[in-house]
Image (cartoon, rainbow, N blue to C red; front, side):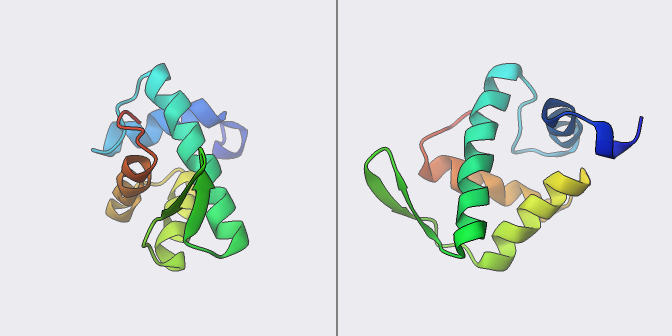
Length: 97
C-alpha cells in the first residue's frame, strides 16, 4: 500500500519503530495526536508560544525545527531531528508519546 493511503496510526507505528521518542502503543498514540495538533497550530501561526490548558507555553524551538518534525511525520521517514518532538511533549506534560 502506498504511504499516501496510510492512516495516522500507521504512520505513527512506522515512526515509532525507528524513533526513541515514541513508544508505539495506542495510549501513547493518543497523546502523540495532541502533540501533533499543537505542533500544527504552532507552524500555521508561525509562533513558538501556545496557550494550553490556560497556561502560555513557550516552546523555544525554531520554526524550521518544528517544520522538519512535521515533514518527517508527513513523509513517514525517520530523521534524528524528529526526536525533538519529545521537547514539545514534555512542555505539554505528556510524558508518554
